[in-house]
Amino acid sequence: MRRYAFVDVQNTESTTQQFCGFSVDWKKLYEYLCHERWSCDKVFFYTGIEVGNDDLANEFESLSKLPGCIVRAKPVFVYKKKDKTVQLKCVKCGEENVSVVDMGYDRKANCDVELTMDILDVINTQPDAEIFVLTGDGDFEPLLRSAAGVLKKVHLVSSTKKIEIAGLTKARFSTKLKNLLVDEKEKVFFSDINTWKYKIKKDVKNSWLEYDKNL
Image 1 (cartoon, rainbow, N blue to C red):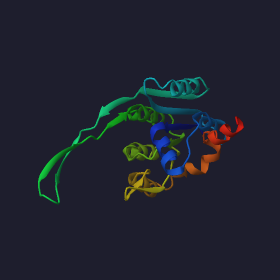
Image 2 (image 1 turned 90 degrees about the horizontal axis):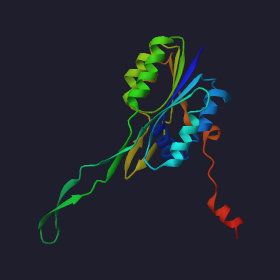
Image 3 (image 1 turned 120 degrees about the horizontal axis):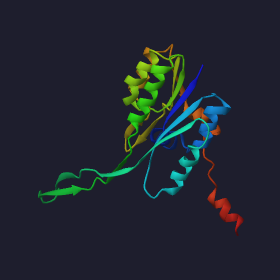
């Protein structure tokens, strides 16, 4: 059986940082998928890289040179979000005022098409393959449902944790993908990325310890 892994870098990174409390070392993830645990033949990384972020560019450039590692990278584009106009009424004088709220900027580097094409290539050419897809994005549900109908196994790797932000509950793993797990329980399996933490997390130096050494 051949195995392939497809890593939605932005989705996976926000999942581990916001919901699991760690950052991913992408080379460690490659090693875990290819050599330490799952024996994947190829690992595909889909990522956006901002102009000027040389460290990230160099990191993925190094990854692309490893056997069986394919990096699909795009430049990150910055988009201005539409400002909101809000009407405010003074509680004292009753006068109404219009205020414009700056909604800031959004950064996008959509690699969904590339990920979709690579998975379709496996579906069309290797029906006996097993795939690992690291994302919680429900937009991939139709693609993964199709994959489940053809391939031997489909593994979804993400987190089902929820967090509270400003009184709102936020989840990373889509309800659409949860439903897929129920509908295709014989073919689609879930792996909690938090259980991989100590194999794939980035080592972060303790800055206060480093400071203490220099005293």
